[in-house]
Image 1 (cartoon, rainbow over the protein chains, first blue to last red):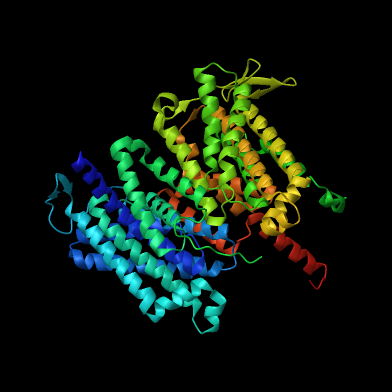
Image 2 (image 1 turned 90 degrees about the vertical axis):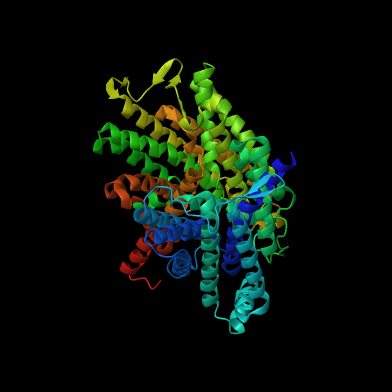
Length: 291
Length: 335
């Protein structure tokens, strides 16, 4: 009974940590530019797929991972420079459609290069599962949680202790004022897309041994990340982490105790419920709109 | 004469009618008729959604859910319960309208991305239910839909009919029917836009706060237009199901919702004729790109991105702007 619960909890926290990383990526870009990047999920896909294909060419795992993350970072910069920056006067819906176009484009490229099959990535360390109170924990789950925690710590340090991080925060608060004090806001936007791509690709790589990977996994993972970010409150880093973990745990519990067919429906009902009572999510900023 | 026509309020409707009725002179192949019929029916739903997105400025990323609900209601009622198509369509549209009203009230308080998120969630929940209730909907495999019938008279793409003494094939009959429905939808939408309700909606789009300050009941109008656009989607969905003869939950999917909203943004938000052009372009594009086989997806994404980057206002407004500029130049104006 308890072991069953613990099992679902492990599954939920693992997948929830992935959602949290995707949601953090959303949050970063949203804060810097108020764009919802529907191509966020594609960075995960690129991370996982590039690592797998490099490894199949004989590149050692660690190097393959580094190269895949760099590739995703370059794509993040390209996305901002080539697609978002030229359309800076476009309205919100147009920007959404541009990121959707970009995600279809990236997915199409991935399908050309890597085909439509599922790819399997080996676990980082042993395949031996760990037994805890009768529940089974995949060793890769520890990697997901550990890497997630380290990334969050780095982000906190980056935003509170470094000049660059503070510049991003300043731009998100008031773009014109940031420019006045000498922050190069275009540079900051590029940086936000790059960091967000790095986060996404690392999440995609650590979770790939558990979920497998294919050219189209980005759609649903990206959507879940968006749900997590909205539950937590768009623009809130704490919200993204809490929203992601909550979403993962609720999903796993629904799949375990109710019905796996309806686990996604519960996730989407959860977002409606949260938004009904808290229209800006759990930790969303109370913004006073100037008219 | 041309000056007078360009001031005529419903000129778009006249142009559209000419295009719709002239098209059979150009095409005769059943496949082309079938494609044109599909486009007309989807365009009807898009015109309805444009009332919400283009005029009231509220984003819905879940409208395919209402389209799918309409289609499945008719499919289930006519095949399992022996209902006639028209009563099923009316009852279905009423139910969808009620659902939209019930979810719309709390949802439409939300703003910007939160509204997109909530509508996306509603659409997804509808999709998941259609996908999972296998006994009723056939699940992911889909279900057949009986032919569309009016007073015991069946409209089927495979039939033969005679209209005013002229023999016409079933494909052509369906096409003409869909064309007339689209004209009716555009006429309704245009009248709604030009009514006091339409002005109230545009004021909500401009600034919701300002609108409420001058006494516009913004909540009422927003939920009204949400319901109207959902009802349009439901009716067009029901007809689409009857025309196709077979439906799967894909017509209620997130991808289809995105396609609908993309048609609006690509064609030109807030322009009824523009969004129809958007529907035509996005339905024809895959047909053209199919020749490129594995490059189809890359090219589709690229074209979508480039069009939106260089024409952020959409195809029709950009073209109109371009023509107006050229005219003022050739007239020697200093504008």
